[in-house]
Figure 1 (cartoon, rainbow, N blue to C red):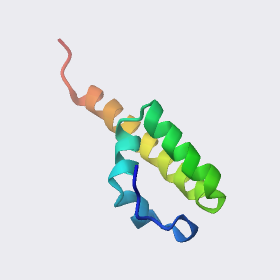
Figure 2 (figure 1 turned 180 degrees about the vertical axis):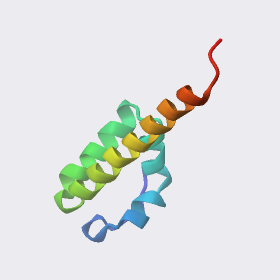
Figure 3 (figure 1 turned 90 degrees about the horizontal axis):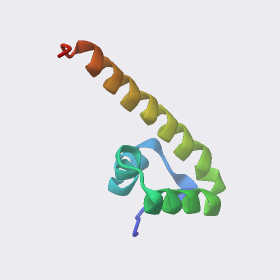
Length: 75
């Protein structure tokens, strides 16, 4: 996977503008997990920000799904 991000100076905007990162947030799989774990291992200065955004996005995605189930009529 190619990326044009300089991970030594990564920003939230860089990550949220990266299609591969967004794909990982929305549709994680073994390949994407390995890719982003590798990025974090090679760039420890970026690891904290990557993980923070991933966790916050996961919480948002989960809360959206929970809210949608509450709003949908049963049966």
